[in-house]
Amino acid sequence: MASNVLGRSLFVALLAAGWSGCTAEATADTAGAGAVVEELQQAFLTGEPSRCRPFVTAESARALHDLPWAALRERQPLTVLDTTFEAPHFRVRVRDPNQGNAIAEMIVVREYGRLVVDLVATAGLTAKFTERPLAEERFEPQELAPADIDRARQMQLAQPPK
Image (cartoon, rainbow, N blue to C red):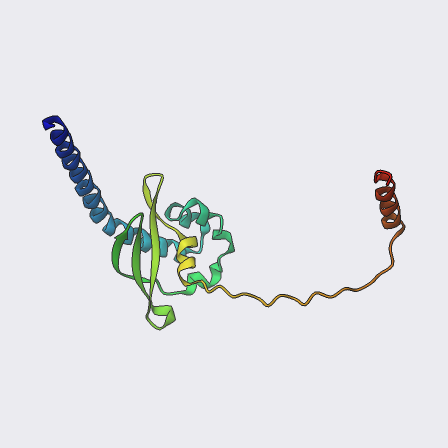
């Protein structure tokens, strides 16, 4: 009985120590998450996708070539306001002077041991799903091609006798 209580106490102590270590690391990384967003902004201003690659996730890097680089070079940089940790990522609130000082959020994650901006998840925060109405189905009769007639005949002959 005593060893069971001791085991539980040891488990709770180790769990508390691990939890406090995780929260201390997350608190220390909030400043780093904001710094990554600022570094990415500076890289955007150069207009070179290769300069942005170190600051974005691998998935986001594949989308870099699709960005409007001419427009990005002319934009004013975002201002980082604050950062919060919401496991497993950081939310960095920014002010966008290009959108009338609107407040937005960017998602920063840890990938391969370093903090990077997840542009795909960030875009997902503001994406609006719109469903297009289904096109009306309509049957338009057309003549069968000789290949269609041959295929139908082959299928008919492949059927077992009745």
